[in-house]
Amino acid sequence: MSGNETEAALGRAEELLERLKATREELERLAAAENAEAAVDVLAELAELAKEVESELTKARARADAPPQP
Image (cartoon, rainbow, N blue to C red; front, side, top):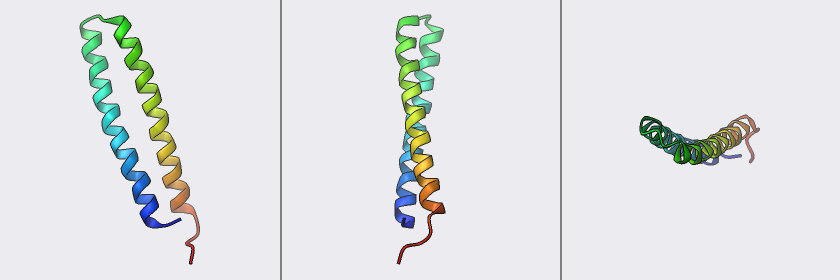
């Protein structure tokens, strides 16, 4: 895999981490407002974002560890 593909995967992971941070802040706001129903929805979104981040990091790691192709 190429360095560009690894960089792209890392870039996507960084974007997802920013979305994760914003979503976590939304969860904190909902918790302060004691809006449990909306907070549950945001928790589900956080879980999905975390899975996406993990997937992109796994791809980036695999690409970085792969032998260079001619």
